Length: 422
Image (tube, rainbow, N blue to C red):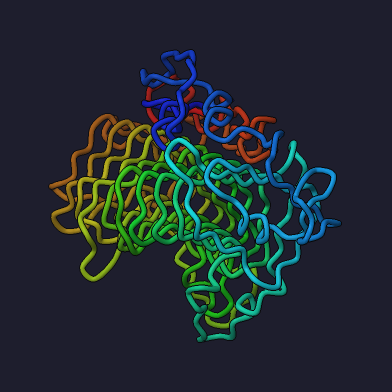
């Protein structure tokens, strides 16, 4: 079962949406950090929709009442009708969009608006017919057309949707106090999930984002998850899997406020699986800055893993801030595992593990490096860990959406307290 470090996500969810946090049992994990089950966290902040006030179904009618017996036909009509406190339940099926779903009405702190799959049914939002999905090479996607879900609103809970073939999966600009849980954004024509602008206190929980690409830029910008080109405090990513995206797994390009990332993996990013003629994908697991000049931002990563990416596992990408990376693991990335060599960078690297990367670490005299595998010395090849097989961690999620357990993956055979634990 996945774990959550520091503040429980249930408590964070309460802070985000103004509801009381249920009691959750906590234990002390292998790293000595306080942990609580992902089950409690996910259920607390974004429960499965079972009592909707508005219902959407493929056989519905947008002139209907929006009940289980008389559902609406489109998600957009339900969104148009929704007011603070409403719950939109989407019945199983594939919804082919001809216009993107636009969210501009906000909920309230104690009455968020909820949008999610009804009773665990499989809901696929398909943007293949959206005009911006087929923007030509060198073209740009108009701002209003970015995202199968285009959100400029706050106090929403969005959960359990599969979003495919769209010009961005979820695009959120100027969004505060939202919870996005158990989303699956894949094979989109830009980043699977992008948060930008003035956006604060958002929780992205148990996201799967994979296979996203951008033909119009030959792979230059489609990431699994991008929190970029903006600012806002209190944004948290927890339990995400970001893989096989054309550019980076996670990208924080020009985002000027700290982001906390926990219990998240990024792998297989930056390879040209689509045969682009002038391939431009970067291929980092976690890109933690960028810009000219890059803002100095103290992003924090705990219990994460980056493996088999085309370039670096972790990179400051020009960010000179006090990035903190702790108890994280890099494996078989084709460049440096932990790349924090920006001039005057103040990164703090603690208890991390590099296994069979092209190079373990790049750092400067201003980088604080303590208790990492390269500090300890010795051989850290693949024979030094119990398993290099990611299959347990990359397989189906647990029923509640949390990461499947992988207790042996990249764990040192001798029990040394370095690297991530899943």
